[in-house]
Length: 507
Image 1 (cartoon, rainbow, N blue to C red):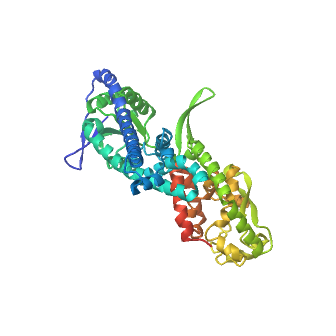
Image 2 (spheres, helix red, strand yellow):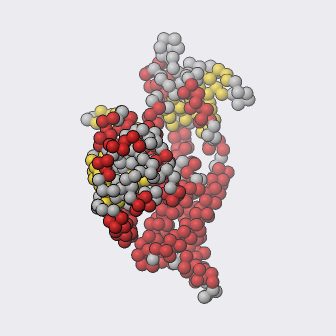
Image 3 (cartoon, rainbow, N blue to C red):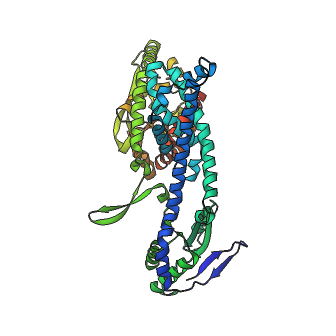
């Protein structure tokens, strides 16, 4: 076995012969607890520091508001403004700080390094936490005043939290000894493999990583490099000599070599990262499950397994219920305008396909003349996409005058809030499609069935009718399903507003 070690003095590489030592086994076992707790301890310290910072800034905000309300000059402009923007009742007690921490957690700001400092994720987390506490006041003091309080509270909390996060990252990095923060990585596999080179370069470019070199085990144990027993002995000695705390396995290894690497690395307390052999596995979430008394590795799409789906369902139900109640008078006006403009019902419904291929009835405001759906075949030559699965006609002659106003702003989609409320759809998701389209689907198209269809989604905020390639629509839907998170939903909802008012790709 040979080690290809990265040289820090020049870009070339050097080969170093390992030293055998039976005492390496004992030494690695003794060192294992320290190695095993190094990364979790550092991550836990960061989370604790971030929580302390966030809560400290919130209570500082509360103290400033309390001072302005109770200790400043009475009847002053500052006191009156503070009372209007920050009424004491909604930020008192523990409800608000708990809601804010939950919002920041759901936005992923206590997880990976990028999200911890992402100003957009922090804004979404603070906004979500604030909304949990102030939305009920809309029924008591009015929506416009609550909206003003919401914007002011989010702004006065978000800016200090962003500054606090940057400060905490700087202080933790300074306070924690550098050798304990650096990740010492040993790569196992064929260093000449392009996939292995890509993984190595990306990992090394992320910062805070020291490469200890490559253990080329792709041909070990096949009679050319000795047997599995000798390889295992040499690998133990290598781990001991290089003091690795992370092992990255790339490419195919013989079974006995893979067993030796895993056993030795586990005993040494190292974190073991295995590069997926299939690119699509990066989009899946593996987990060990026991089935009928046997261990298996289960691969599942994150959107179908993530615990945050419960939060998504709660948001869907609450959002749809509140939307239907608040928009009920508006619905009545639109329905009246449609009936006065052209003969026929105010609502239009069709059967569409949803989660898992289940057929449901889909509702919209009618924007075309009554019976327009039966004219679809005779107007197929006007379809500007050329694909019957994406039927879009610019300046469609079937559209009514009221429909011409509703469609660019997507107001005709509002009745789908009822579909969301009863569980057929979600606020954010792939677009629902026709059951007849399934006959022309290829294997990768069926991935669209992996999530509830949505009122808005990646396709809608990426150009709507300007996207004329069906494969691109499917790609956007698959991207949403495979990368789903609560934060992605929030970003899509935030992008929906300018997309609607900008009327890009709408007709």
